Length: 505
Image (cartoon, rainbow, N blue to C red; front, top):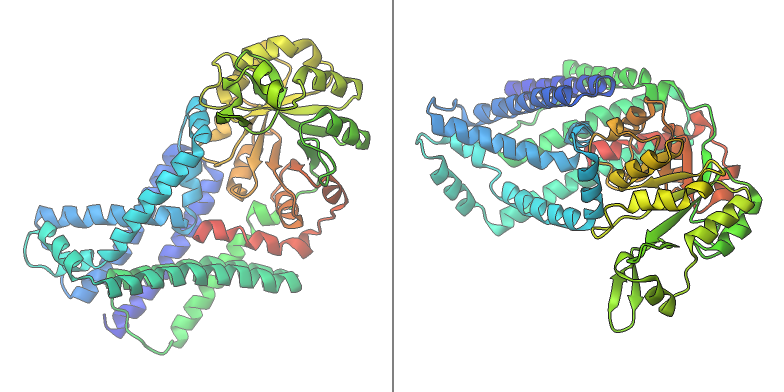
């Protein structure tokens, strides 16, 4: 590419980034799956058109009109687009993740098997990503080739790549990720010490322009697009500055930044423990910490093989000569032979006596009895209605069983992967894993008027971030820290810049 073509490529890149920002705002307002698919298609066509221009300008020729190379380019483009999704896809990955329509039963199965699914997905992605980096010049070679043999071109591309060149390409990708991370963290650090409003929105604009620009340029290099070096012209400099100002002003009118939360979050004591002052999920911790009168104590229960409910967090227990065995595969007698556990019935009775409301997590495994929710609700219904107790779980079908038996009880969905369109589920509140919760997810489920809790917020950083994003409650092991936390929106909003890590990494 010559200098003029390179300049045009940079101009078009800026247009594409602005398009992505507009589409993201559009999706924040209109959240149906159909609109997500439509906007993703627009993103795909825009990005591939940009790369196609760069590739044809580098090759100095257009693709021939035969079907095979056209199909090869289309398939390769889809492949590349798919590789970008786990890297944020310029902010679109979140909308894709939360737009997928899955049933409550499917959500539960995915969450229960999250470790196996996550490990498999990481391995598969790593293999596909490595192959994509190894054969990154394939699209350019297809366009350059005069022959209608895309498979032969692929073989030659793979064969021509050496381990040294692959290592160099891999290092470029890693450098891109590290560089984007340093940009975001660095600007957040600057804003931590300078809470000026103009500085904040300029920083947000720089992140939303520079991060995707750097990623597009690096990907272009990997694809073999040749970008000429030149001294920045005044026009190009003005254009870049205009993009930053546009992105900053665009962020300034975002509800996330324009409407800071005005209420303090509900404090929920995780497992009944404060500052490690007791053993979690025990009557002793309940008695010790109910005296502080926090709104809720959150605790966990498991069902045994003979349908008894005990207070326990982990799904399994170590049994001599058998190793770790899931609780729902053990009888209560066997459990008590080797471990001390408190019965949930006793725990609930004492909580009622102490007038301490509970949020009870009903733990679920692949072997959970299909009627566990119904049995739980029938067994404890009189005691569960004494105080405004609540039940939450990753097991959506079990929550619905509880609701059918006790219509007046609030049920909540616990998330760990934060995946799927969960906003339409028939629950009364949500408990979102704070590391993967983002502004779009919190606002989309919060707009329904249902409480949104986050877990487990123990550090000051996570507490401030979740409060500023508008969660109505926080599950924490550090209840006193949260109680005395005072969030200053202007001083602490630098933390919101860190949310960009989810968009570009």
